[in-house]
Image (cartoon, rainbow, N blue to C red; front, side, top):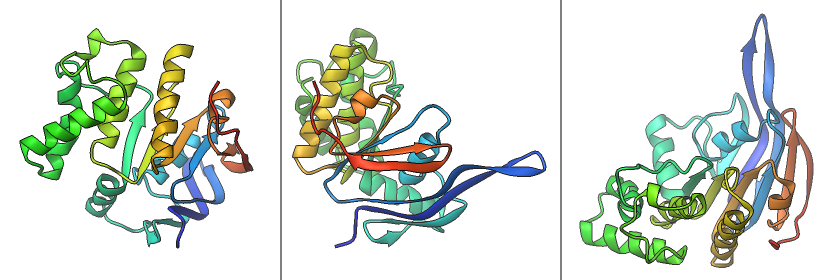
Length: 232
């Protein structure tokens, strides 16, 4: 069986004056189906560029990327959008919740693009919010919730469509220790349920919660080692 994600010599090059700069420099690695992988690096290391490529939000300058065995490089924008909607749920550092919508409405919103009926959308959104411990916050607006609760709404939004993979970009970057613990517990539980989790972070302590840690710096792969698989 093909890996869930497979990268071969992926590069991303930007023009810089009369030359060019490598945001990613010939990176190769795989993420297996059902794996919990953390990609760790400091600011400017290339991890955000890598996240955009993994999530089909951007295309590499060179190399090959396969998602569930299918080539991604060269797909048109509409095809990339279909891949994203089918395979990947996104969680971002800034939550990206709509302040005038309740938590339930925020989770329901992306399901509109899947042409689901209202009853199914509502059922999926309720189930997703209950699964992250927010069953009593369905009618609350973002301003009525803590940062950790808002991030859990964002996780619920990501899983409501039942994607194969959760791609989380610095999901704990704005959170206090207690909220960080809550969000990481949700991600670990999703992993135990069979989801592929790819966590982008600069925090070494958070990265240790993954089963595997991939380190990058200056656009290059620095190390690939086992994580501790626990969060304390």
